[in-house]
Image (tube, rainbow, N blue to C red; front, top):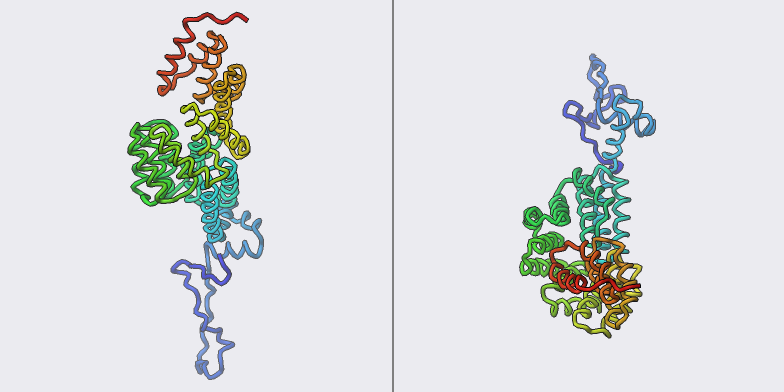
Length: 385
C-alpha cells in the first residue's frame, strides 16, 4: 500500500468530512448564536484501522498481543504488501519465462531459484502458487524426474488459483503417463488459453502420449508460431526425431546454429548421425557437446555418455563403449544406455550379463530390439574369462 492511499472503511465507519471543524476553531461569524453545539461522541473504528495503527505505532510484535494473534499479523502484512507482491509475482513469471526460453538446464535452475525466492516472500499469492506448480512440472517434463520438486509442485497446485492451474494439471497428467487423463486435461488447458505457447506444448506432449504423432506435430508447430524460442523449437525438433527425421535434422541444425549453447538440438543431431552411421558428424557433435556439459541436465549428460559409447562401438571398441554405457546407466530409467550396454556385452562375449540387462527392459518401444538382442545373447554361452 502506498502512503496517501485511501483505506476503505465499513459502511457504518464513514470517514469524517475534512471541512467539518470543531466548534472552538470555527470563525466567530459562523457560530450559532445563543446555542452551544452538543458534544460529539467519539467515533469508534473497530476492525482493521486500529490494528493497522497498532502495527505502525507499536511494531509488528504489538499485533501479536491482540486477540487476533500472529496469524492475523501475517494477513495484515499480506494486505499491506499486496501491490509489492503483485509486482513480485509478475517479475517472477517474466524471469522464469525468460530462463526457460533458453531451454538449457543451467538457465532453468536459475529460473527455479527466482521462483523459490518469490514463493518465500509471497506465500499467500495463489496465482503464483499455480504458476509455481506448472513451472516445476514443466521442469520435470523437460529435464527428468525430480521427486522433491514433484512433491513441492503438488503442494503448490493444491493451493493455486487461475489459468495456470489448468496448465499445471495437464503437465502433471502428462508426467503420469496416463494418456487418457493427460489428453482430457490438456484439451481443457489448450481451450482455456489458446494463444499461450505453453498450452500448445502441453497439448502436443499429451497427443504424443496418446500415439497421435501427426496431431502432435501440428501442436508443436503452433507452439513455435505462438512463440519462437529455443524452448518451443527444441521441443519440435525432439518430437520430429522419431516421426520425420529429415525435418528433425533441418529443425535441429537451424536451432544449433543460432543457439550456440543449446544442448538438446545437438543431441538430436548426434542421434540422427548414429542412425545414419555418419561417424564424422557424430564425432563433431560430441565435440560441441563436450563444451556444453555444464549446461546439461543429468539426463542429458547420460545421453552424451551414451553417444560416446555409440561412437566407440562404431570404431570397433566394445570395451570402451561398455565403460561409457555403464556410466550412463546410473539412471536405471533410461533406455538407450541399457540397450547399448547389452550390445557392447554381446560384442565382448558377455552373453549372460547381456541377458540380465535385457531382462530389466520393459519399455514397449524397445520390444523388437530387445527380442533381436536376446536372440543374439541366448544362443551363445558366456565367454570364459
